[in-house]
Image 1: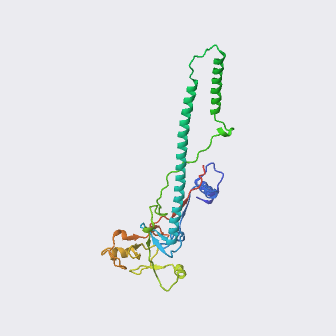
Image 2: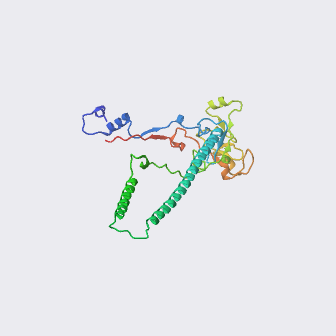
Image 3: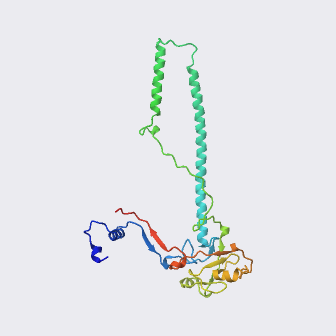
Length: 294
């Protein structure tokens, strides 16, 4: 489209270009953005704090956490569950008391109604032409009208004002779930991870500033987001998946602790992306905003 066509505003048709331009300026519609490598978590960073781990642990699903962060999360969840259980038990006990009071009131109502019926029974029939019968009939009709007026709802009389009932709480779930996978998580499921640094002489600050911080415990290859890695459960060593396929799986022995391995003992690490489309990670972020009608 020519520049004249883009800047033409005298047309009667709302063109696609004009709609796209107005959408970007006004803040309507869905906005898409491709994430770069700087916006993606490194493979050795905690999934909660997003910082390099000092004492890393891994879940059976392959998510790495800082031990302190994940324990604080589990403790916080247990505290919240305890609060919900306490509120649920309080509601349950209040409901029991309310049901008991209703049963007691219903019983008293039945007794009162029975006594009123008994009191109306007379041994001699009333003379309809006497003044007492007329007074009794008038009194009963007046009493019925007063009772009907009393039962009518009113927004101005405090005793008849309708009240909003509290929302009913459901029984809380006592299970703690992993914040990343959503599966049940227990403290005993956390496995310590032993990363092998590139240089043992470097302190923590110097190690964090390096781009390649850790190497494979067997092949000494550099680890990163572009290298699929796995953790061996018995020793906690981090090795590349290429090492697992070629060196470990034929014998199913841990090369560090020399213990027998099973398929569950080899835990692939859930890594972030590399900024390239072939990394196997969704790198496109979308923000849904109000839609502008044409």
